[in-house]
Amino acid sequence: MMKPPKKAETIKRDLEGLLTSLIERGIADDQNFPVLRPASNNVWEVTFAGAEHVSIAMGDIDYAAIYKELSEKRSYTAKLIDGGLLQLMYRFEDERLVRHRLAYYPSPELRPFQEDPESYLHDELFLDIVSRHIVPFPLRFDFDETAARDVVHPMCHLTLGDVKGCRIPVSAPLTPRWFVDFVLRNFYLTDRYDFVSKLPNHRLYFNPTITANERRLIHMVVPMEAC
Figure 1 (cartoon, rainbow, N blue to C red):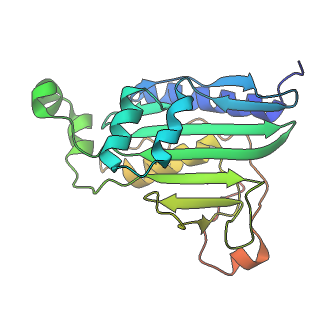
Figure 2 (tube, rainbow, N blue to C red):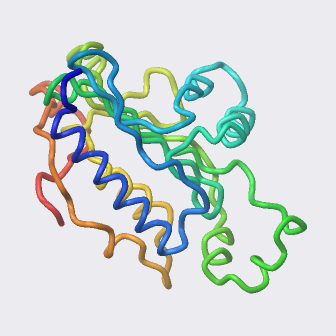
């Protein structure tokens, strides 16, 4: 068996550091640390225990039911304090990234008061996050070399709400650091809590994959250096 690609090993270490940071800051409630496993002689995956259940989300069923199944089967990299689920999966062929699936599934309902009254009464962090009125919807950053079609199916794209045909072009694949930064910055920063500024430093970047035609559309840009 060939040794795993260096980039795959770097992604795994990146994820381990991010999860440790989330745990230390009290924003992660549960987690599955990443595993690096071979899919064939020169193909390696960075994934997590429970990843075999991610296909549940592809079914044409109610979002609350999807979330419940994923949560009960612990099909996530991290479960956040308000129940939000993070899934991060990467596939490499030698040193080339060929696919990633980075998903965020917010909890469709807040944790009932009766289940954990002490948190509501005494945990400022929990109160600060769950007291906001947010309409939950899933989002996913996909990267797939083989499925790419100019404009119609950008190699890297953002899907909002699991809406079929929603593929907002993204300039480059996302590292774990950028994905976690995106979720925390847009859904978990509050006036009192900043979970982003002390995340581990970036370990690597991926080259741009967006086409000239896709650049002419509204699209998202992944920075090539830390902000």
